[in-house]
Length: 149
Image 1 (cartoon, rainbow, N blue to C red):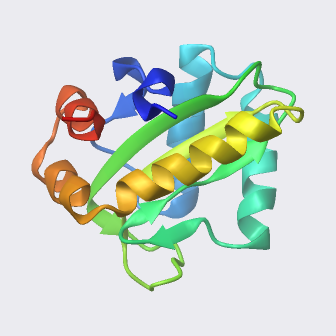
Image 2 (image 1 turned 180 degrees about the horizontal axis):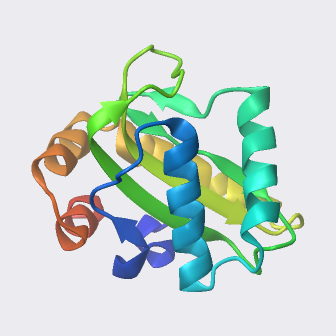
């Protein structure tokens, strides 16, 4: 799966302003609403927070991948954001999160949802990719760092 096919430049937030997990999630959900990725921010937020309450989506290596299936999404939709200072996400490795990938899809989109989760976790866990991402500060730089070769 090619990550960048689901991640246009306008879906990348190079600098998150939120100081907490909830602030960041709301900022990213608002971005999804503005982009037309979701039709109801409160419904999406409810599903995302319910998923987060079950188990942290902080997968380690400075990465969190909050996600949910919701009727408010028409297809697999993704927003990626960078938090240069890092924030506490309750990650499995206890380290701060610098990159948040918010993923929503309709309830019946099991295949693409799981494939994207696996692909983004694999890509962002790569040490070289992490180093590239930490050096860039623009949406274009982030997209370039995620693109192959």
